[in-house]
Amino acid sequence: MNKDKIWLSSPHMGGSEQQYIYRAFKENWIAPLGPNVTGFEQDIKDYLKEDVFIAAVSSGTAALHLALLMAGVKAGDEVLCQSMTFVASANPINYVGATPIFIDSEKETLNISPQYLKKAVQKRMEKGKKPKAIIAVHLYGMPYKVKEIHAIAREYDIPIIEDSAEALGSSYEGQKCGTFGDFAIFSFNGNKIITTSGGGALITKNQKLKEKAIFLATQARDDAPYYQHSEIGYNYRMSNVSAGIGRGQMEVLDAHVNLRRKNNKFYRNLFKEVEEVKVFCEPEKQYFCNHWLTVITIDSNNNMEWTSERLREHLLEYNIESRPLWKPMHLQPVFASSPFYGSTVAEDAFKSGLCLPSGSNLSDEDKERIGAAVKSFFNI
Ligand SMILES: *Cc1c(COP(=O)(O)O)cnc(C)c1O
Picture 1 (spheres, rainbow, N blue to C red):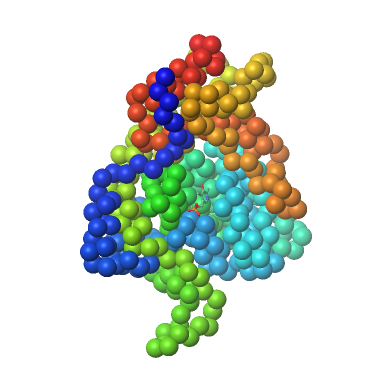
Picture 2: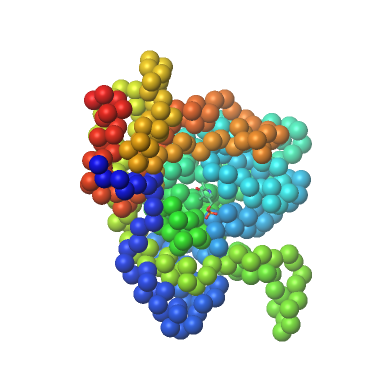
């Protein structure tokens, strides 16, 4: 048996990344600014095909922090946040001293539930506190219910921060994820759809907001010949070396989205005969998912041998990495005191779900090994 580990989602270089880095070295742009940074921002803007403005920063988490600051969220405020997500969606709420209010998922996309979102807005307003922002996530690249969620945000006039960390390349009704929110963010961490080794981007709707974001991300320095500061700033700008990786990665983004979508097709085919397994895919035509990670849920009611945890352990014996879904935030010890609106959709998905190897660099041989391991588990 081939002993090489099959990873969940590992970096996949396109080939030209090193040329951009070479140029950065040659021109001595080894700094958190330079032609790769502005070039990368332009590449993303061109890709999104909407009238948006991009600020490249050091991480997706930093971009979320900046988005909350720019949305005017302050200490003591409340922010509504999808519970089923990676902790980085919620942590920045605490950075600004606000309180996260967590919302359950709906079953079709596993993202923020319109029903419970609306309920939470009403209940918080009854308590005399109108939430200052909504953080909605396109989990595993699957667009959230854009129409319904944005209708609620409009009705109550609450800004949406669109966490597109996992959804670069996804779209809804032909419009790219990352262009719907008042603010949006991408992540270019090592395991995301494309990577800059570490990095992120903030997407805003006009040039002034972009400039404000860059001002905050570069220590909020006043326009003076000396170092004068009238606001608290941050050191959040992206490195010109990292941005070089990003420029190379943008050249292969669409090709890599296609490969991940092929992986999803492979899994749908593989599990066709296993009634208990549901491969998570687009619920309707208007959704286009990059399938950053392919997710399955296992209905183990009839057979407790077939749990997601057992499958995870079984795959590991074959040196294949898989991973539980994000543990919902309202079940996290660190957020134990935060309010939650919902039932058990996120919790059930967490208990029965598993993320399978989904990298754009999965080889046919890797898929054969995964197929064999899965078949031996389900006796097919
Ligand atoms: C990765 C991720 C982030 C954070 O991005 P970093 O670049 O790792 O800081 C935020 N939200 C979600 C949903 C993510 O998956």
